[in-house]
Image (cartoon, rainbow, N blue to C red):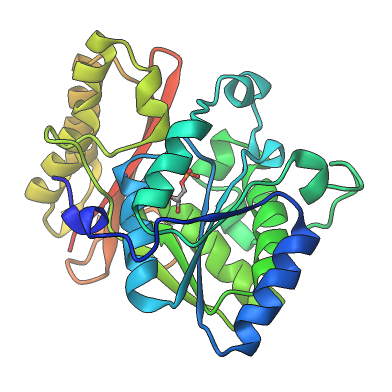
Length: 295
Ligand code: AMP
């Protein structure tokens, strides 16, 4: 399922690394004065082909591609999840350089949170904060907003690139952009999958070989929903998807058929409204999420 975009010859084999916000700000100012349009790809590292797809999209629209790697403590509701988050910095730098990234911003935690992580601002995210991911990861989306507001105000990109895999996060970031009235164009890039359908994810590398085999059941369940979806009661379709996950030893947080605009659950589909299916489930202690547009 790979997309060959990032095998294109890199426009430069040099990538500039900044660790300090002030240095990055200073450098960006001179580039923007020269009229260069900037694109931004925020990540938490442990990079894979999905991230490279974002970089390739960024390169195709912007003059400068700025990437960040920052494992944001504020968005981890479970400290163990934060501690176990995979890190592969050397390989990440190699991949980003090969992909033609111009700048990597690699801040330490105090650079992003100089006053620490308490007493931070609160964003009004409405229901989005509390449903689906929000219900199972309390505080997660406020944490996402903390880091995204800081990064966006620092980089002030013309274009922002994020992946469809984190659908709810994209709705949150879209709302944040409107709340902060930032003049950035937001681009959602399709999910890159392994050959068996598993969405590429940094967390996949924590799966044992057996769990890795089972993990394909998430995309099978999503495909099953898409194939069976008809107007009317969504209950039976959801039930069949749950059986697929159960058979693969998943412990499911949620399976939802939701309205694409605001993720409101759809109990009775009118056959017309834009909908998607979303799943979050544990394979062992690894929590995976995925989604699929249904029409
Ligand atoms: P992360 O490093 O997991 O926070 O992800 C950084 C960005 O990469 C987010 O915008 C994700 O939605 C995106 N992303 C993660 N996995 C994939 C994938 N398989 N395909 C495309 N984009 C992805």
